[in-house]
Length: 214
DNA sequence: GAATAGATTGTCT
DNA sequence: GACAATCTATTCT
Image 1 (cartoon, chains in turn purple, blue, brown):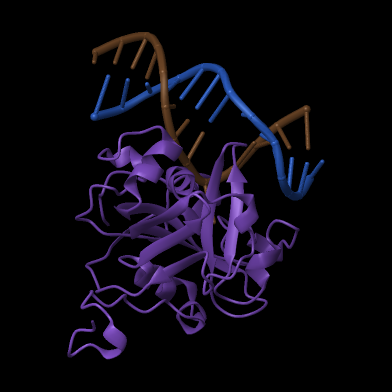
Image 2 (cartoon, rainbow, N blue to C red):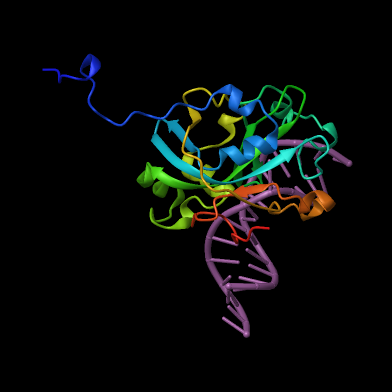
C-alpha cells in the first residue's frame, strides 16, 4: 500500500540536501574556503559510509603563496592535480604517515586548493572509531587533517578523484559563523604564514587547535 | 597544560 | 640525503 500525499509511495523521510557542484569550487580559493565551513563531507567505501560536518579548513593559493606546495608554479606528479579543473581531490602524504585531503579550486592553470583540517562526525561513527582506534565520542576521532582522513578512509587512491562524483563529495548545509586565524604549521613561509587563511567554526569542539581568532 | 621525541615514506635537491 | 600543510606517547610542570 502506498501512502497518500507522497509521490511514488516515497516515505516522508527528510530530503537529502543537494550535493555541492563544480561551480562551487570554480571560484577564488579564499571564497571557497570560507564557504566550505559547515558543509557535510561524505565518504563512501566498501566498508561503509561516513559523514562529518567540516569545521576547519585552510586556503593555499599558488603560485605566489610560499606555504603552498604549488609555490612558484612548481608542477610535479604530486602537485599536478592542483593545476587542473576545480572540484577534484588533491591528496598527499605527510611525514610518511598522515594523508591530507584538499579540494582544488579556482580555474585551470591556477594551482589553488583548500585543505580540510577537521570535521565533526555525523554518521558512520562506529566505522570511524574502528579505523582510528579511538572511542566514538572523543574529539580526537576527527579533529585534525590526518585524523579525519584515517576516519573517512581517505588515502592515495583518492588522488585526483572528482569531488562531484559519488565516492567523496560535499552536501550543502546551512551557513554558520566563521572565524579566521593564521594557518597551522607553515611558519617557514615568512609573511605568507601570517595571513589569516585558516577558517573555522569557533563553536565546534572538533577544531584542531586553539580556537583563537584574530 | 606544555614541551619534547620518535614514527615513517613520498618527493625533491 | 633532507625534509614535510602531523600525531602520539611520554615526561615534565
